[in-house]
Length: 286
Length: 263
Image 1 (cartoon, rainbow over the protein chains, first blue to last red):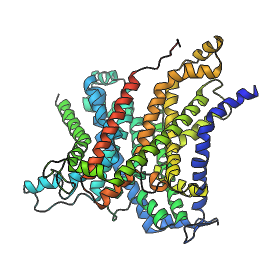
Image 2: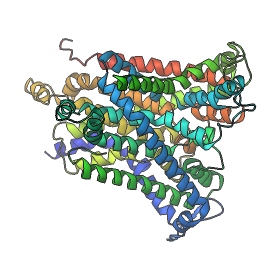
Image 3: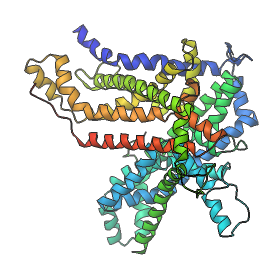
Image 4: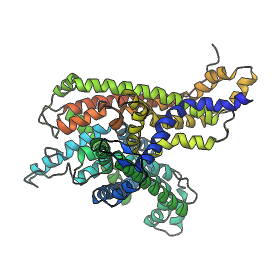
């Protein structure tokens, strides 16, 4: 009897052996370090102080990083919603053969290395890239337009990278919509636009919220695109965290920034789930 | 009718947006020019030769391969074990819900935060940045993915099968190997493929835990400082690898798990 009670824990042992020292412990240490004080050697003086949080939240250098990142994350999330909703609608409403094609087009970039996608965008937006070749050839511009290494270019790259994360939950939500409702509403005199606005949009809200949450958290954590397509004039969180911890050896400050980033994600998850619970109480949330 | 045309045109544009950059990245690999640009001045295979001859790329590819394999083995074994514990037999031991939440939690933590947190911990545990630190870091994310995919396979699993094999006098261990394992095999295989791709493409954790020598990091450094089409050629070979993995995934998911009774 006693042995049988142990069985699940034996099955769990490998997972816990990895996750306790390499997941629970790091998060605990992160929290502890964020309350310590940086030493020039990279060590952390074991005091308890909130001064790191004070400087992260009030110093304009760090505050700008957080504002940039949150703004970019929200912007890419909204853009993904605007582009992704009609696409997901088409996926659900088109014939089975086209559905396969449209879904394949969403899954494929997801499975291809991010480096490949960045290269494609560099070849499109660089000074010697597709857009500028077209501009110069048509005489619309006499010198290359600077798109790469600007905020806009990075934003487009991010939209490309994370659009699938919005489309897939939207498709999932739209698949549950009872489409008879649309016919019922039109037989009651509603126009097609009104049917979509008043029936389909509210019913797909849970998918939109999950998609927004996924895109937001992914942009926040993205290191590759800010590094390869962004500019140091618009600092983003992930490269700033790396510089703080590895280049400046400011372990405690970096830890406080990371905890703030974590809180930002938690806040956004909470707000999203609250919105769904209010507006779509039947749905499941992340 | 007009709105259907509008939607069709919009979808075509999004398809172009999604797939165009991938096609252009592939085209760049065949460029004869020195820079990453489009359209290429001419066609050649010189950058494939250059990429294959680049010792840094080769070392990084080998390193990423071994890291991904080791992380996959650890993740799949630990994730499958966790999924078994969470569903099988008793299935509802004290604290089950908490354990499940804990195992899935790494998916909710931004990768860059996890990497940052892991660096001082690894050093504290006597693990310098390098192979094993990277493997274990990737496994922290691989385990919840694997557990999730195997749990999904268990959702279609009929627990009566366990009772049936027990009533036929089969011991629990033998029953696991001969009945349970074949039935959850598709979940295990997709867990392995997903973990492998995740690890092979990981940047956020490798950034802190490796010595900058995994393939994505090397390719990033190349784009930052050298930026020749060689990096595109190397990437095209990577795309072929992911396509192969995808085809494998498709085949595995189409073939259902079966129990072999004889033998």
